[in-house]
Amino acid sequence: MIKQDAEQLLLIKKLMTVEPLIKHVSENVPLSNWEADLIRQLFVFTRFQKNTVLVKENTVTQKLYFLNKGFIRTSCLENGEETTTHIAGNNTFITGFKSFATGTVAEETLKCVTDCEVFYITKTDYDLLYQKSENWRRFCKGVYEKYLIITQQRTKDILTLSAEKHYLKLVSDQPELIQNLPIQHIASYIGIKPESLSRIRKKISS
Image (tube, rainbow, N blue to C red; front, top):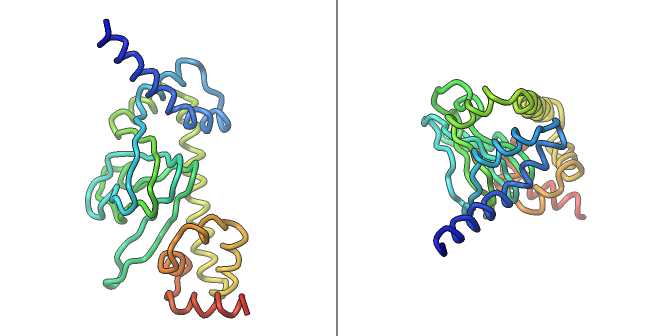
């Protein structure tokens, strides 16, 4: 009886932790009770320490992550140098999207910049949820479209804005990145060297 009660408490605790994810999805698409229950069953809550690697470049991505708290950075190697390609913060989904969707090897590495709290779903369970829930399919379409827009906008900003204007835009649009990420990651994200960003910061503050 004690063992059964303990198992029930663990189950209740697991279901409760998934509620921020349910809330986030429900704010974007309507969820029936059974769809919400299915998400609760298939997503797993866990914590990762800073510098934990979630996806390695040239491996097949097997999990989709919803970042409840913290920051995760995606990067790739170009000419022997590591370049930041995306930074995910609270209430965002992140994975090696192309690898996860197609089963091909990932072109980037995902790494925790801070301690993180995440909900994750395996590719097998994701496919099951995608097959059974029309509203989840609608939600995922929105997630992919948002990621594509962010990626395209970042590319446009790198090509059309000066480094200083790009940095100031980042300060205005995503101040939480400036507050929580080391200078080398911010510099890489806007396509410049850390020393160049240091000069820009000094100029702005003077």
